[in-house]
Image (cartoon, rainbow, N blue to C red; front, side, top):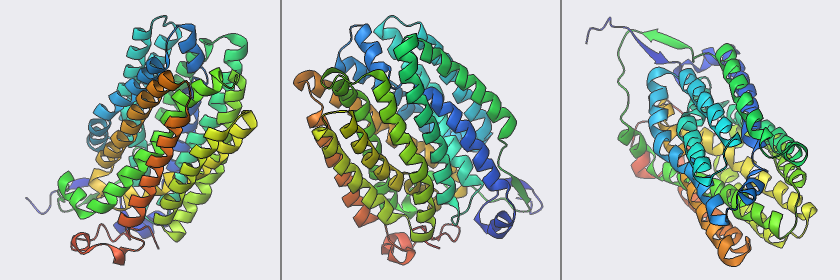
Length: 431
């Protein structure tokens, strides 16, 4: 190839000093955080409503499980391809298309009177929105370095949780006083509004022109550089989302049917979880930048397992809120650390692809746990067994992370350390 050929590559670690001297990168993170917060209001609005909606249509627990799983299955199939597409065409187009699909699917929800229509809408929502979170995480990876990536992922998660606070609380009160269909319409409108914000506020990552062509690293080679770390991160992410799937299906049905919890109480429950995670994601995200990622992931998984036991023992809304706070602390500890460590060990040319791969892993947990917990609830009339399984999965994630994730770059096993260093990044996230 002609040495004078110019190609565009994403700005990355070798420009660390330049990035740290300019605030554009973190401004982009804040813009995306705000947009994500508005989107998550739309996601969160419908969360307290599904159990009542299902009941009004005469569905059982397994049907609610299928409804939840259909979203995740669609995202499993398309998260990887959409992540790769964001590497090719850019992050912003994928984010906008995802929001458009989410808006239309909620309009369908609002007028659905049949379980098949609802499942089809849920699948459409998952299929078209599959690219949003991989593209968002990849964009943050594009504009940050290993020194501030955990903090940035914490901010992004904070935006996610702001919507998680407002959405369920708003949805619970709207369903209580205006009916269960109005929140779906508002969720669709929120998605359209967020799409406009993204178009105006979020820009593609700054690119630089260089004088030599640098080929993209094949995905197999990227995976081979840190097989143990990627495997441990995949299991940790799976465990994190497995618990959420159980809460959304079996536990919500348990709270409604056996504990007689009202929609507004479910909204308060998720609101308290979200508030805790808003602060937790920022605090623990910063901590992962200064103290390393590993033990936050391990301890967070253990705390999450303990919260499952607390949910089993809960007998009223106060008990549920306390258990939810413990769960949210555990999720805050491991969430930003997992996302940051994925970016730390990944070649910049494949950020979108790898975020898509891990998005598929996360959604596979969300596909499996609703189906299992929905069936168990139908068989036993209780969420206890499902919660025990969730706690066990979380403990497995903690054990694997403790063994396979290195505390420092010098602790990487010989096979991984024989691979070239990834952009000079300390793969443990230590400075």
